Image (cartoon, rainbow, N blue to C red; front, side, top):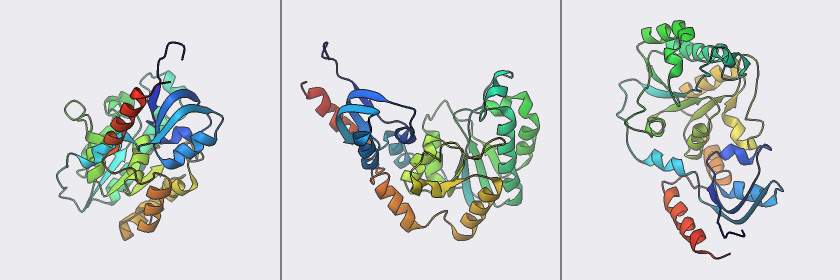
Length: 272
C-alpha cells in the first residue's frame, strides 16, 4: 500500500475457497460465483477491498472450437491425473503413485471392454503414463481395444481438453478443476473420488449439491455409469439447473472474459 501497488487476482480453482488450506489479502478479487463471494466475505481467512463475481474464465473455451462427431453411439471423455515420474518419489504419493493410477485405468478399461459401442478418450494434463515402462501392460491393453484412445494433442490446440469435454456425452474424471467447470456448464459428469488406499479426497470440502456427481468406490462408479447409460443423464436437469444457479450463479455463459476485462478496467482506474 505504501508503494501504491494494486493487487488483483482471479479465482482459478473453484474448490479452494471451500477448503481451509488457503488464505489471501488482496485489493481486488474476481471470484468464480456469488456463492464463492459470500464465503469470502464471511470468512476471516480472506481479506479483499473489492470483490466481483465473474465466473470461471476458462469455461469460455467450452463455447469455441467444435470436435467432429464420433461414429460411436456415445463419446466419453476420461479426465485423468498426471503421474509422479520419479520411480522412488511416486511411492510416497497417495494419489499420484503408479499402482493407484494403474488401478484407475484398469477400472476404466473394464468399462471399455463391456461397452464396445461407446468411444472412450483418455485426456489429461499430459500423457506421461502412456510412455512409462511400469504402465506397459495397461498401455498394451488399451492399444488393443478399438473403442478407446489416448489424446496426445498438446502442441497445436492448448484448449483441446475443453473442446473435447464440450463434445462429450459423458465426462468421467478424477477430482480436477475441469470437472467442476464441466458441472458449471450442466454437462454430465462422474467424479471418481477414491483410490486403492482412500475413499474420499476433495468431495468432503465441496458444496453438498456438488457431491451428487462424486462416487467413492468402483461399485458406486459402475452404478452411476449404468444409470447414465440407461437414462442419458447422471443427475436430473432440475438438479443441474439448481447447481448452475445456486453454486455457479449461471456465470458459465461464454462471457467470463468480458466481465474480467470490465472489472480489471474498473479496478485499475480506482484510486486508493
